[in-house]
Amino acid sequence: MLNLNDQKELRKRRTFAIISHPDAGKTTLTEKMLLFSKVIHTSGTIKGRGNGKYVKSDWMSIEKKRGISVTTSIIKFSYKNTLMNLLDTPGHQDFSEDTYRILTAVDSCLLVIDAAKGIEDRTKKLMNVSRINNTPVITFINKLDRDSLDPIELLDQIEKHLKLNCVPITWPISCGKNFRGVYHFYDDMVYLFQKNNNKKNNILNSKVLFFKFNEFLLKKYIDQDLFFQFSEELKLITAIYSKYNKKNFLKSITTPVFFGSALSNFGIDHILDSLINWAPSPIYRISNLRKVDPKEKKFTGFVFKIQANMDLRHRDRIAFMRIVSGKYIKGMKLRHVRIKKDIIISDAFSFLAGERFVINEAYAGDVIGIHNHGTIKIGDTFTEGEEINFINMPSFSPEIFRCVFLKNPFQKKQLKKGLLQLSEEGAIQVFYPINNNDIILGAIGILQFDVVIERLKMEYKINAIYEKTNIMLARWITSANKEILHEFKSKNKSFLAFDNFNHLIYLAPNQIHLNLIMTRYTGISFEKIRR
Ligand code: G4P
Image (cartoon, rainbow, N blue to C red; front, side, top):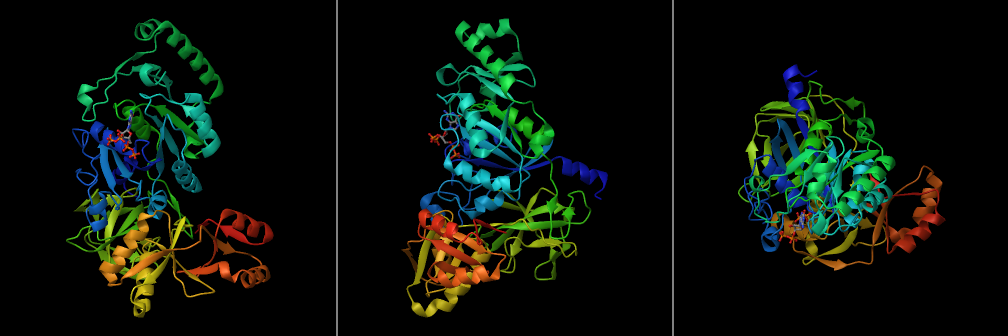
């Protein structure tokens, strides 16, 4: 077991990610959390991606051309003596399999929903991934300063689409032009809202007025009709929704729900306090042999992301490792379990977005970067000698496909080698159809294709181009029955391929086709996720 001091360090940590559909307010909320924790002093630092101090990465010309961030940011900040590791999930065009994998490295998620739009497509996808590990979710319904959907309708959507039971912790007093603030069920306080949409605003000029719930006092601030409507709503909410229960939250059966406006700094402290009080400190992970407790003395960790060329001056590859147990100490010897080799880690680093800092120690829940000279794969486990493997690093079936062609056909061998390495790093998925010599690439976000072409050119001196294919969906194929599998393979060769790890995959032209084949072959499993 870790000594008491180290266990204290562990309890201080919260490792979480923000889940949201683009434009729901993830960047604004991140920025405001940094503002509240005094890491930055004015808003607008993060918003100008590429120019901002904290989301800076300029490692590839693609990023420069498009002014977006391809690299994952890990933002570390402390609030009320709690150490937050916020793992940023690539969002807009840079949405990729990495976004999904990051969710396997966190202990809780903060779900941000745009109050006017409700549950959107990307939120559903990300939540499906977070549900695989039953990660606890705290919900923030944002933009209450604008006209919103009915709050009960929003909670209905969460319950219906995300299969989470809602536990309202705060409740809005109207919305849009009439938004007056929130009532906090657990503090029994009213927090009044004062509109402040100045994008450069900071905490100092947006002091929130709050008081213990009191009918007479509240009536001073809101008119009779609004008061009547609000008190009726409170009665209804108290009757319909259950109260916060830690066990159900940690099992991801319920989600505590908060309302606010990130842009106006309203409700941010409620979210931060809920992360401190309710989100779990680093939790155990399951390995192939046993459950690993973060309090164990010996170091264990797994790699969930590999990033190439983070820094043009270094031109290197970095493996991002989530520490599961024990403590990292500079210069320690770690076992790279898959390749059965011991290595001395003398220069692990921590990140503040684009910047990296060599660190002397780190604890479970922290993410450290180590140099990767081409030997580390996504999902690799590092220990102090124990031969275990963490088994929860999934591959997600791609959503877009391209056929890759060489400009110089004599480079086929190099192309295959390059693609193997890039797929081991999780940059792209590669499929070799059984019936022809095409090479199909699959990705979750469109930008992954551009990154791959650019990296093939820069790192492997390969000039390649893409052509569209008619493939729309991919499912990994398994069956417990060898005969059924054999028959399936021989009859469907033209739709089957092998991935780079020799797993059979079905490449379908559309959903109707896939549905038909799935009903025809009930003895075959068509998996969206491969573990
Ligand atoms: P994202 O990272 O989830 O994609 O969202 P982001 O924070 O960039 O927010 C998307 C837009 O929504 C931004 O406006 C932002 O200012 C606005 N926004 C975020 N939170 C709130 C809120 O509480 N209330 C209101 N009214 N707006 C909010 P934009 O005009 O698209 O971008 P910008 O010009 O502000 O950069």
